[in-house]
Length: 221
Image (cartoon, rainbow, N blue to C red; front, top):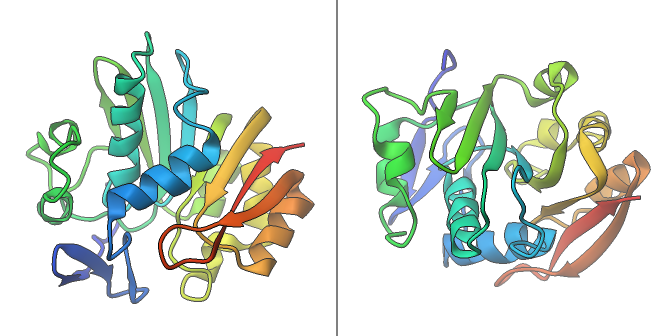
């Protein structure tokens, strides 16, 4: 990737973005948060099938991708998982390795077995196709011709990274969602929910993970 690497600091094993002053995942249990918010929030693994396409705003540590791949494999789905992530500020592979070190149950080797400084933009495995789209998410989505069955909206908190939650970007998310497709996100900020509803999603505020009272999920109407 040609972008600047994401500069981070550490709180234990949890990486924190110095650009946005926000952790990449829950300080309590990042994997449990991913499984609750993004997998359960999109009714996964029940919906998995060959060619199921997950798209994500914010690749971060790769934790969401790895948890999704692990769930896809555990569900014994024959075929391939497609996963597309939009990322403006990639982490170095060295930082990824440290950030993912607590999650020994995940297939981290599929990301970390590289000599590159950052994860390649395309990774093809035996049962997955991973594409990391570099640059500004809104501009990238305007040019993207893909359709996702499920969206993981995982930008940093709206108050810290508002560009990842604008009504225009949420409209692009909807435009790139398959009929009946879904989204899930950890945030329940009213402006985000209203933007997703205006974009065409049936939006629900539901109990959040851990200390977060609420999160948001929805289905394309």
